Length: 219
Length: 219
Image (cartoon, rainbow over all chains, first blue to last red):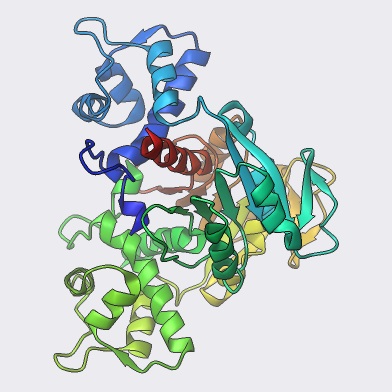
């Protein structure tokens, strides 16, 4: 499945998807440390804050060259900036959002996006009540103009907040137009070639996991 | 961390969190098969649809007793119902949503919830413009009445769609009032005792993972 692949070319060192999923959390903690004017931190101190082992932190960061110095630890600002580069946050990622309902609007309003290079350039919907309105200054377009829009803009990521019945067809259209990364909130799995990256956020499945844990505890 | 624990008592068979995270996906596929009037399915056929190995399916389901019959495969309706019970979906989980902005409203509008025993009983906000409105028939209350509300209702899950600055304090209040499961959308980690279950949905981290994969591919 696309989400279990790192997307790296053969011959490059493959980073496991478990490591990749931990990177943004390192970045968040480093950002918090930086805001609190912490200049340097040992892997032990960082591990206590993050509730992971110091050895895991060192192993994870060693995938990218290490960054730590024996006896000094990590320079917070340097590591934060390097992690940002590894995550591609030093580049601009143009995003379109398919579906301008509550969830689409919530994504468009996400405060963390702008500061991390995620730039929302359009929302799309079929609902005439939504078309023409703006969310945080970004217009909601008629989904009928999607093809022209994608051809005219450099779209890095398409977020799909569409119903299950509509998402697969729109996803296929986007991929056929050359969009290479889908951030999918619809409760459906896509089956695209490996060069199409898919990150699923399946909210119903997330809450079912919680329900399982509640009820397995009570039995 | 709470999210790596199954929450089971010592002595019970521990189910790994990786298995638990896969259960809702089985449930979704079985529900789709049921809708398409499929009566039975082999683990091989199911594995092809789900893009996992048949052996993983058998191993995962064996954690709960198996359900398959040699030479027959799985009875779809039976397995669907059993999976629902395992996930606690045959019980009613009352949910409150903290934060009635776009994301809170999106969760309240989720179509999958009602049919799976998730029953939203209230939204809470500080914004006078939102207080008093209803979302899908559910009222938005002033967060000032949260304590009384939680004491008077059986709240299984609290969804937190609050800003990072406000989420920890409200989470602590909820836990002190006896709420045992938090579905957390704020970009912050909580540090509660093990009997408090936390399921995090960190949207910024999810899109950063996608950004990593886009840019590591291009290098």
